[in-house]
Amino acid sequence: MLPADASPTAGSPPPDVMAAAAGLMSPEHIADPYPTYARLRELDPVLFLPPLNAWLVTRFDDVKAVFKDDRLGVAFEQYQINRQGPGVTGEDYFRVGSHLLVCNDPPVHTRLRRVFRQPFTPARVQDLATVVERLCLDQLELLRPQGRADVSADFAALIPLATIGALLDVPLADQPQIGRWVYDFAPVLEVSPMDAGTLERVNAAAAGLEGYFKELVAERRAKPGEDFISAVVQANDADESPMSEAELVNNISLLYFAGQDTQKYMFTNIVAALDAQPDAYARLLEDPSRVPDAMRELYRFDSAGQFMGRTAIEDVELDGRTIKTGQTVMVCMAAANRDPSKFPEPDVLRFDREARTDMDAHITFGAGRHRCLGMHLAQLQLPIMLRTFIDVLGRVTVDREAAVRHPSIATRGFDELPVTWFA
Image (cartoon, rainbow, N blue to C red):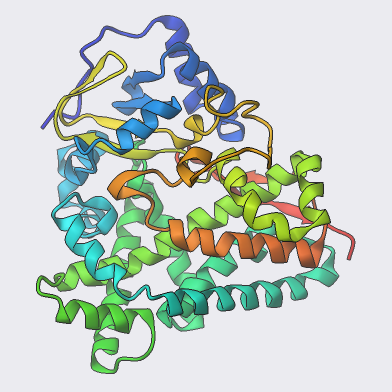
């Protein structure tokens, strides 16, 4: 594998390209990354970024090709070495992460996915839809008389957390702590190097999650119920090639990552986007039943996951560039979703775009065998959240001066999104 200080085969990019790339590290990029993506897509759609020791891919066709190329896998160990150095393999978060479905390539990925898919029966999914709607309506009825709320803290963070809690039958009192661990662990899948403080929080979160779910798995094995954890434990124990106890425990906690922060941030992005484009908002206000059909465009327009990381398992040629074995690739779904060669008027919400499949409409959830683990949960939950939000509160207005963006180039959304409405 390539050492952490690897450089591309091509020479240094020209100054105008590097000037545009520098925008990725700026506060302005956190506020609005799309001008930077547009400039880079035009100047150099396959670009090596020395500060991140990674390639950035921004064009739709290239992004789709990378996701479908099995020569570009996760290679979790090399991915983490590229960002943190070789000593990273001794960290708690690395040990926990190495067991996770999303951090493994076949054949481990295939084995883990097989066991976890079994308990997702149609009946369980349908029951979850009923749970989501009830949670949304109850919370929104509490908020409605107030005339104001923080969409992030008062709604978008609560519903996914409570939904996963209901699926796993996790005690309500424990869910806030689990939510904090999930938030602290999230930087593991980014590309930017973690400073000492972030690394400490990531390790503590990894240990907290592992310890908590280890006890819960033991409890459900001894006394199984009708919940998802009990079903996974039973499916795994009966499998011809079962997961290890560490794989079982840590992948159960992974469900919170699939269904918690990304959906919270995606929902805040949706509310902010509709507020900024009132014509699109008006169409949904006139008829909230249009929400399910509008979701493809809302996923495309401003995705919570800006990119997914991949590692070259062997040398790969892309757009005339050689991505060397061991190098990291930032596959930028957010840039691809605004590619004007694929989406006319990419910076406008248009609910009339024609698409035969999700992959024609956007690439927000990735593609190939590592397509986002939380995709199906998001597609179940987010339309219900938006439809009930519109039904109960009507038109809300975002207080943009008071809004606070999540400080990450990898995950886009609002940590605080104050809104008002006529109560």
